[in-house]
Amino acid sequence: MTESYLKQQKLVTHTWSPDGQFVALSIKNTSNADIYKIGQLEKIGTWQKVSTLKDASQQINVLSWSIDNKILIGSDDRSVFVYRNINNQWNKDLVIITNEKAILSGEWAPNGQKCVVGTACHKAFVLFFEEKNNWWHNQQINCFYSSVTACRFHPSGRVLGLGSTDQTFKLVSCVIQENMNFEDQSYNGLFKDIRTFGEILVTINLNGWINSIDFTQSGNKFAVAAHTGLIKQYSFNEDGSLIVDNEDKNATYIKETKPFNKIIYLNDSTLVGVGYDRKPVLLSSEPTLKFTSIIEKCLAAEGEVQKSGSIAAAKQMFSGKGQKTEDDKFGHQTAITCINKVSDSLISTSDVNGIINFWRI
Image 1 (cartoon, helix red, strand yellow):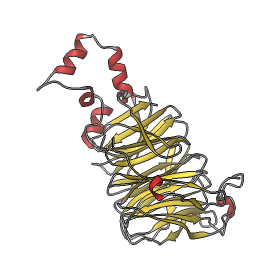
Image 2 (tube, rainbow, N blue to C red; image 1 turned 90 degrees about the vertical axis):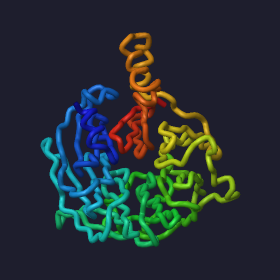
Image 3 (cartoon, rainbow, N blue to C red; image 1 turned 45 degrees about the vertical axis):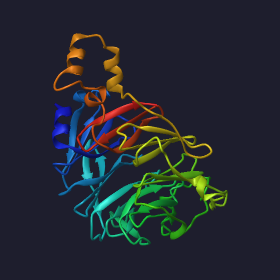
Image 4 (cartoon, rainbow, N blue to C red; image 1 turned 60 degrees about the horizontal axis):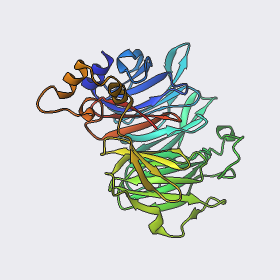
C-alpha cells in the first residue's frame, strides 16, 4: 500500500531520523511531509505511517532532520517550519522570517542548534532559537544575484557553503555572535576560531548553476557540482584558505557520467554523485576527483537476483511489451533528485516518480 501510494502521489525529497528508525518524505501532490516507521528497509510496503505534517500549502523542497530530533521544512509557499517531537507528537515552533519567494534549499547545522535555508529571492537565512521569546529568529546572508539553490554547513558549524544560479559558490561565516552557545564548543578543527557572521571567506565562479555542495567529514576539502556536469573539488590550508595550485586540477567533467543533481562524501576519499545516470556514481577524491564505478543493483534488485530461476520472477521480468530490464522493475526511471547516507555502508536515493531505492556501498 505504501509503495503504490508514493508512486501515485510522487516525491520531492526525503530525510532520515538520527537513529535510522524513521523517514520523513515530502509528498509532491499533497504538499505534506509524511513520517514513516521503518519495517524491513528495502520493502517499503512494510513501512508504517505514524504522522503527517500538513502546515505547508505548496511543495516542500526542504526536509531535514536534526541530530537532536527536530524537523526543518521549507516550502514553495515561502514558509519555514520547525517541529519538535514531544511525547510522540510533532509540535510546531514559531519561526520569524521575512521572505519574499520560495524556499529552495536548506539543512540543520551538525549540532542541531541552528539551521539554514536558501531562497529564490537570492538570500540565505540562518535560523536560531531565542529562549526568551520562544521563537526561531534569523540573520540574513545577502551576497548573491540569484536564487540560492544549495546550502551545506561545514563540520565546524561556523561556516556555510552556499551555491546559486548566479553561477557562484561562496564560503560564508555564520557564527551567531549574540550567543556562542549555538556553536559546538568542543570542536577543535578547521575554522574553530571564526567569530563573525556574513563574512565571505571564499568565492568561486563556475560555468553553471550550483546543484549541490558537500564537505568531507574531516572538513579539509569540499566539492561543488554544477548543472552543466562540471564538478570541482578544493582543499583547505590550515588557516582556512584554499589550496589553488592548478585550477585545471580542481575542475572536472566526469566523461563516464551525466550531470549530478546531488553529491555526498561517504568519507574523505570517496564521493557519490546522483542525477541523470539514474544510479549512484562512485568517485575517488584522492588526490583529485576520478570516476570509479557505477553501483548497478539496488537492494531490491539484489534480492531478486537471489530468487532468480523462479517462474514468477521470470514472468515479471519479461511480461508486457518487449523485454523488461531490472532497471525498469527496481531502479529509477527518471533522474535521481535526492540522496542520503543511511549508514557507513548504505545510501538511499529517491526520484519524483515516488521511487526510493537503497544501495550497498
